[in-house]
Image 1 (cartoon, helix red, strand yellow):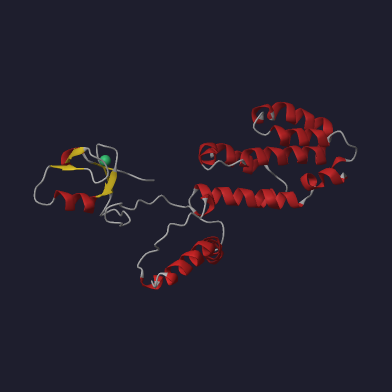
Image 2 (tube, rainbow, N blue to C red):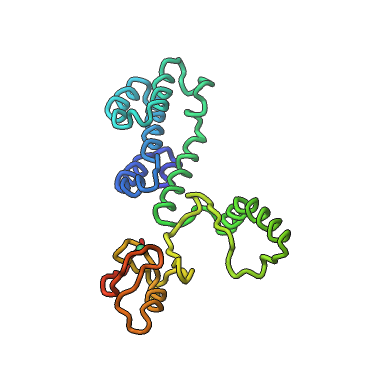
Length: 231
Ligand SMILES: [Zn+2]
């Protein structure tokens, strides 16, 4: 698919995006629009404006109104002679655009399969760069209070790296602070709160069958808690 894109054949990428439409919507991807936009640009460059207008009439209404400004710009570009050479729209009609579209496909395909499109090293450097200001601030504060944060087993502050650095859902038990595993899965209590199985067993030690939720006043019966599956 990527090889075909580099040869300016967009069809395999469009087919792939359509068959993965649900997953792409799940990551708020605009890939399908980007591919149709590129196909339109290719129609103008290879077949001329008339064919491009026919293509737009058939394919663009479904992208309205979400992509109205982009569609207006695309259609506006047709008002000029020699569209691909017009400097006002050169970013759209530049052949580099194919590389960018291919990179966009790789990025979104990796994202829906929860893998990184970058090398592990650049991923680590990128995450470190984003987190550094927070760590520096914390380091200054803890030094001021006489604490050595190198002695902590886990980071004392949560650092949100944004969606691009999220790959898997994990559950950290609010009671034991352990990350859930197959041997220690998250358990849903009937009040809606979730704790790990280890925490639940600890609370239930001594053959108790009812207990108070650690996070709300609800009384829970041990038989009503259910295993929770995270994908
Ligand atoms: Zn609760």
